[in-house]
Length: 223
Image 1 (cartoon, one colour):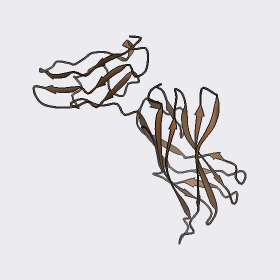
Image 2 (tube, helix red, strand yellow):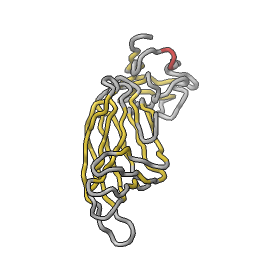
Image 3 (cartoon, helix red, strand yellow):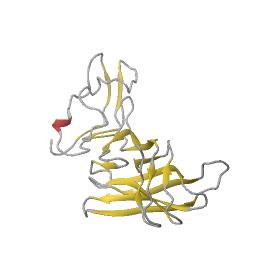
Image 4 (tube, one colour):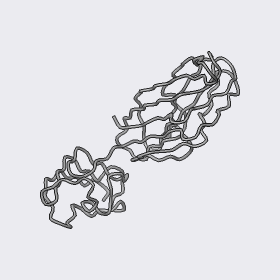
């Protein structure tokens, strides 16, 4: 199918019956298998975990756009990526941004997104294109230094980098050997096909290195 298949049926399935048996290969374009406002029961009971409702495809597939459904899954475009194992980001010059490093980034629940390289979330679809980015990061560095965390976007259509947001915080001089700055970001942006989001960091005070602590993360989700 070069165009869309759309349904908003209200049906009760008998035992072992499926609603549809489409596969990803049946569709050419992203988000063209559209199920919107479907209500499905099996023998009168709701069970959104029943994989036999759509046995050959799931809501996560790039060709799917399933919303406002009851009794079956919905598509939630986006996903999260977080720091599982910390590592140092080397600051080579004051005020110069470096890609935020982690020894291990871990992704969760990517739908219409993938992880082409460490710390990146890339949009695979073409709709929706309006997204919200949330980030919660704890960055360790030298006490009282001023750090900036940047949300950056690769704009594939123009083959260039775009700054979505810079947030600046001072490193707290805490008791003990751990001095950190806290970053909480909530910003909107547009992501077209093959655009991706990643984070950069700089130290505006010195060349003291920066470490993103474990369990720091950012989320991209459709608005």
